[in-house]
Amino acid sequence: MDFSGLQGLKFDVRELAGSVGDFGTILPLILALALSASLNLAYIFLFFGIWFIITGLYYRLPIPLEPMKAIVVIALAMGLTAGDIAAAGLVLGLLFLVLGYGRWMELIERWIPQSVIRGIQLGLALLLLRTAATFMTGDLLYFGIGVAIIIGFLVAGRIWRVPDFSALCVIGLALVIGLVVQGFPGFSLIPPPQLVIPGFPDYAVALSQLVLPQALLTIANAILATSLLTKDLFSHQVPPKKLSLTIGLMNLTSVPFGGIPMCHGAGGLAGQYRFGARTGGANVYAGTMFIILAIFFASQAILGLISGGFYGALLVFVAFEMARHGIKTDSYLVTGLIAILALVSSMTVAFIAGLAVAYFIPWLRNQISRSE
Image (cartoon, rainbow, N blue to C red; front, side, top):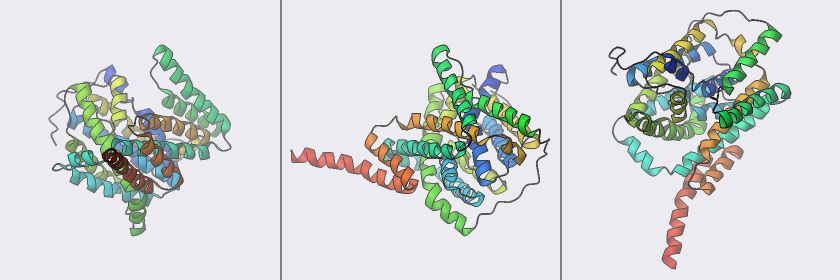
């Protein structure tokens, strides 16, 4: 990797504003996963901070970092453990490190239909909505407040083009209410790191439930779509193999020490660009914020300050963001089938069935046209 100083980076107000452009998606997923799987929030924040800074210096562009959404959603829905999540991160880290060499990405792009990827996105949205329902049970007031804030920003954005800071406002309000009700838990310095070593059962769960859907989503959204968007926004395309390499490296170096599986993301890039990010300086800002949170403000008590109703509202926000992309499909039959099967069965079963139908439909049409 080439880290030649700070050439090409800016550190102005626009970059600072853009640095939080994807926090509305990142923070709800991190907080919900840390609460559900009893993960160490400090090291999740720490490795997000480190790799935000590394990617900013390396790419010189605001290439975002996000939790691997399929892993987070499925882990929340199934109540998976820290070992299951770590095993998936290590397997995927090795996979994308290998895929970063040669022409593997081009071959994969050619053989996976778009409707299948969209189906995975829509299925994850449905799983998130189901998980949100469990968080809001018994806490409908705070859930309603959170949803009202999100809807208010959506309406204001349509009418007055107000930037969507709804998720950040919900988190801020939730913390204020938690502090008033429970009191300030105190500052908490980051604890010593502990190795996370998955066992064989963890790898079995990861391979059967997490790796396949996340690999497909990462290839489509975190790598191919992000690469294309860099060309659209900056007239300079970051090659897919480069993005695959950094995804591999960040997971292999972070997950064993308490980080969670991470990737890039086209939606995150669009969000950071929308709020002003134009260089990797925005990533340096974002990384610095995460490191400060990790060192001083990441005790497990912080998670307890946020009411379950607010978590539910935040997950609804993320679900609708995912569904918005999922419905941009060229086959509602395939996409809808995968989404429904993901909800009632598993993502792996949904993918296999959807892929079979996606290839069967053109074959059937071809047979019908030949017989006419």
